[in-house]
Length: 70
Image (cartoon, rainbow, N blue to C red; front, side, top):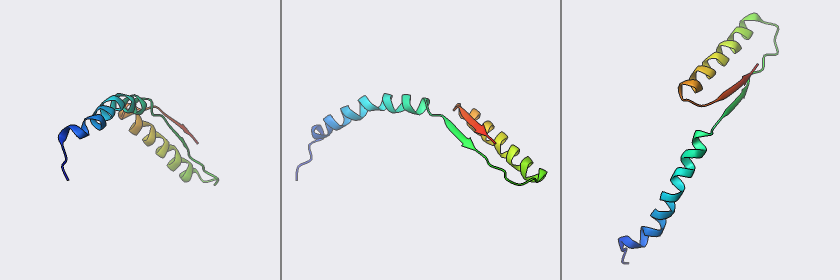
């Protein structure tokens, strides 16, 4: 079986054309998170609020938008 390097050229061209599209889609990535607390417990509410703050900080550091609802 003869694998000539030019046989891969069409595939490489397709990948090269789609790469900017993939990068643009990744740049538009956004995240939505819902945290539910169904106990009347201040410690659990504080835990949920701390988790929300950590999620927001994490995605802001990555430069990605995030929406968190508690």
